[in-house]
Image (cartoon, rainbow, N blue to C red; front, side, top):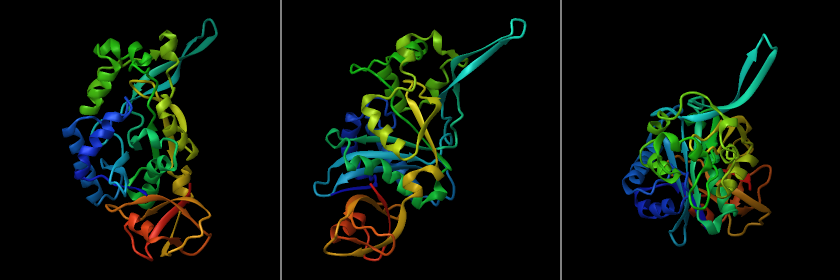
Length: 338
């Protein structure tokens, strides 16, 4: 059985393996011991904090095989963007020009550096081992974060965003970066993303062009990258799209990947999940596959389980499920159909 839980300092060696295997562009999972240790300690402090509103807290989760102890994935929630540093993105909207004398009005697609998305809750750091892609465990890794938000709404903003990794070739070339960022830093795309993971995006963003970039003036290959999802990022996109997330007019600063956005009130796992009571049972008449989580904070746990969930009354869980959720008979749980 796999269970999602908050990261611990003892996870550092295994977390480095996940970082080495993660997709280029997942800058929140750097392959660097010191930086990963800082992220773990920051997450531990966030879970321990008495937060009464969205702030700089970062909640880092790992997906663990309880039998082997092996970590097979990780994901994060940043409570609110823009607290410690500006959250930069590119706004993709037409730039309008007009000639009254000729009675001509024309709109040209343009990319503008902005901080419009400051103050949003951010889902990031999604990574799962290749053999578990497009399995119920991927749904668990992504959606259990939403169940956590549902259990602790006061800690998060009223809208949630996530940046999906944009297109790059198998050899690490990004046509979008080559057409824009390369001219300002003389760095290959892979190296720029690595620096963002080790330090921050701010120092690179502040050197990006401050004036609108007219999309028709970009090479066709770069234009084709705007809002395009990397093939290995498609699953993360699909899961959240089914949750009610939608693309908007913002794209990633470095690879042009899409940004997804949803109001808390429109997210399926938040609005349609329900709380109930766990009842220990040696046998379960399973009727379907469900995501199940406890309602805890620092001891948060979530699993996928075959259950019989009725409209009312407690939900039967096996002793192994109770152990995986770190709860006892009669505890409150949250459930939603997979």
